[in-house]
Image 1 (tube, rainbow, N blue to C red):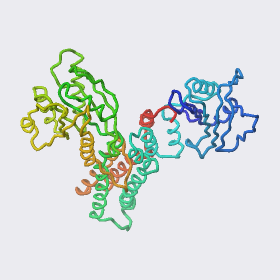
Image 2 (cartoon, rainbow, N blue to C red):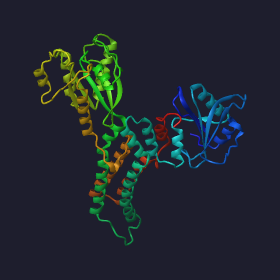
Image 3 (cartoon, one colour):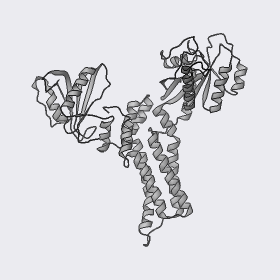
Image 4 (cartoon, helix red, strand yellow):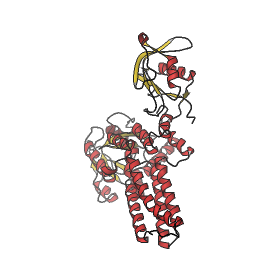
Length: 463
């Protein structure tokens, strides 16, 4: 990334809308704006002021043709998103006018921004740390109001404060050790082995509490993967449509209509739930069906929760038994659902109880619909038993941050074991410094360019 460049991008989704925004950031942003913007009624523009908005036209400097009637926003460094000069052009939200405005900016010396480059510059220029930058992405990708609230907590510095507190505690343990190493021949107070061990135990307990709740963070960030499984024509696609309250999957009385997995997200008690419709686990007749069954098995293995469906209007058969065996073998959390209760019932309840003793099925009709609220409540109960957040540490932790925290924990464990074995202070200090390094990776104080590029490649262009 070349920080000396002025970058530009369309910051709003391409399509027809009331407004579309083209954003520029860098030293040449104001200079380019002067070339392409003509204020209405020859109004004088104060190019030295900040946080001003002007009404006028974007004009192609080469032809003199007007491109669009716009509002031009001027923001002077350092009090901007990137801590650089920023110009935002509020155009009409059509793809042609936005693309043309972008092309004119590029011709005048700007460079097309890379994915996430505006936020990356905010991080590099010290306005936010890396955990806050990642929270920006969480805000953009938030699937529920609760997910949004947690992402905002991260942007406000929730993760940073937590990691900074852990780092400070580690330094408090490390400093006396360093003193013992550097001033071993002088008369200084030596911290007892018991006190050192107590401090390390307290650190490990704090880290364990965070890691125990990491699954909750993941659920709010990525959603709870909930897979509907059952024999062919049991009503899986109808249930997906009913939960979504719209026709997403094709529904037919012809068995085997669903050949691929279909995934959509719904909001249950603030937690994003990723509902996955699957093909039946039947004997395949062709390559297409074989691929569909493979994808079903993959989705089941990856699921956080299974919705096991049986058809109340037909007898249990070999395909049902195959589904039951697969579910029991994986030992995942599941709900047993009897569908089509609006039809005459032929299902063998005793046989079902033998397959799933002590499991109380939820009886529904996906097409009427009947008892879907009860099903949603049961799904919510299972999820909320897994998801537990405390107000004191209310933020989302992503997989990268979790891995860094786990590595820091491993270093502290090795230091604790070394302390018990009577290893030298140099060894203990080395492990604690490495633990601090992994915490610094979370906030971005220690990071390679390769890792940084990988993180921001997940952002959209324009953010």
